[in-house]
Amino acid sequence: MLERTVKLLIVRNDKIGDFILILPALSWIKKNLPNSKVVCLVSKEIHELAENCQFVDEVVDDTKIKNLKNLLAGYKFDASISFFSTFRIGYLLKKLDIPIRIAPKTKLAQFFYNYKLKQKRSKSLKPEYEYNIDLVNVLFEALNMDDIKDVDGAPYMTFNPETIQKRKLTFIQEYNLDVNKKIIFLHPGTGGSSKGLSIESFSKICNGLRSFDDYNFLIHCSESEEDLARELKMTVDKNVRIRVIEPKPSILNMVNNISVCDIFIAGSTGPLHIAGALNKKTIGFYPRKTSSTSLRWQSINSFDNRMAFSDIGKDKKNISIENKKIILEIQKFITSV
Image (cartoon, rainbow, N blue to C red; front, top):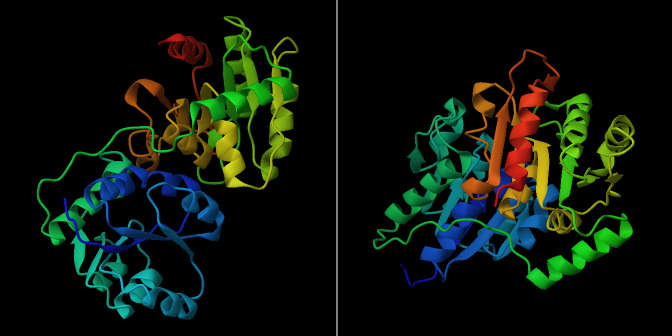
């Protein structure tokens, strides 16, 4: 463990799920560098999420290079880690003259960094969060650290149990749920990050699970996905207890909502990864594309809380599944301790 203060710039300026998958790496940094100052450069979309992360000290929104250079220069960073590197950001960090600049060894951007790690992430040989942890290990080596403590496990986002219980009771009252039944969130949207499960398949899963128990189904969506959510609600059998959660334009509101569910079912998208960070039981559906596998993009919840299915068809728009077989497996997973 290094006692001196290390000023560290973290770059992950893309989507929600990508930021969530660096949380184990950030946790590891804070565990071994407790006096470090961690500043995250993020997209405006995830500012609120990063700002409320327990492993982050300050957040800077990605903006025009000239403005960023002036803003970041004042921090006098000791090191930076670009979990996702672009030519633009690499150029900026080089101009800032940060002593230790770490990034994956990929494309032209690699020439702006003095510490590079060959990863070949697109081959999907291991989970994305492990690739991120490997870059932190480069930092520890560059700082000549020894006696490194192990990476902590899930959860990586936490709430006071009493707070969650109050939220759950509010949900039960607002959506007229059965207090004695599990709450299952369904998220039919994908945010455009990958192809997802069809409305028909989501509907069959709901109808199939209803034959085992009268679960509380809630459809979770963003504002842009509300029509899709309403379509799903209209498609399921009338005897299925199902409601649409009113979407609000806030990532923190999304996190708060997901914190009350028992099971979260979705494609490979940001909300699935939020559920994983909360260590909820997740059921994810993934494309067959090599760079998008369930191994690489698995959520960061504990192994026993994670279930994944891969596309078995050739439909270019939707993920194909064996509905009957999957429903039995999901039911077993839901009822497992």
